[in-house]
Length: 165
Image (cartoon, rainbow, N blue to C red; front, side, top):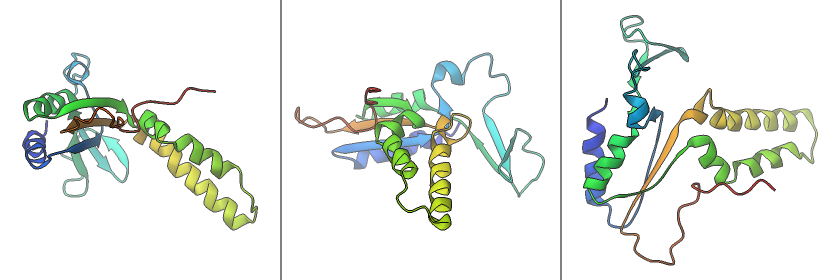
């Protein structure tokens, strides 16, 4: 667990008078983070985009990280005067921001030359990776706020997915 994250959130909350704090990362709420089924812990190693959990191989050549405890961030935010406004998977957050519309636009090409089609397919693939639950779509988005007392103020976009049809 990254204990420095709690100190970081404290510093952000102290400096923020009015606005939002968005935390995007992979991780879990405490009930999943500390579940007995997670007997291997949350240590993650990545070498050449491949995941494994042995920090003693590829020393100096791999990324070593751990999942975020989002419940700890929510509780620390509460202690520091931040209100939790929402916690959603990145895929749903991006869909609520209109990513589905963007994907649809990329499907309706007016120009069909090979370079344009290749570019559109690359863009679509990149956007799909952001939503794919086996890739970046499994990231979480925690939105916290402070000083948002205006009753006419709209909630942040990304927390409410529009209805299907």
